[in-house]
Length: 68
Picture 1 (cartoon, rainbow, N blue to C red):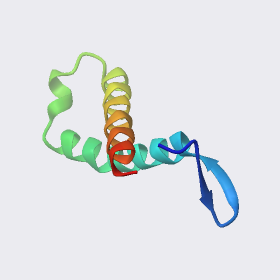
Picture 2: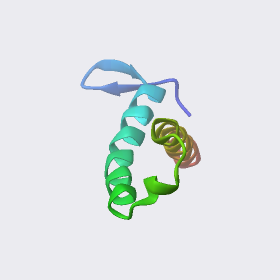
Picture 3: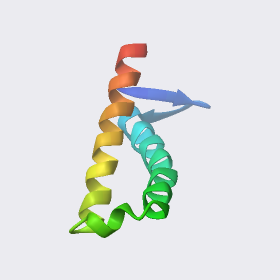
């Protein structure tokens, strides 16, 4: 995996790009979980959302490292 990405001549840290992608993937996932009333069984919704973001960030980074 590369340390940074060249976007229009600007070097951006790769982990920042993967974090933004994980955040973008997390929004519809949280909406779906909320529509399914999953948060009724969650003790701390903010902590659950943070854990979901970390898992998505790991998955995106893992896939990106395998693709490169």
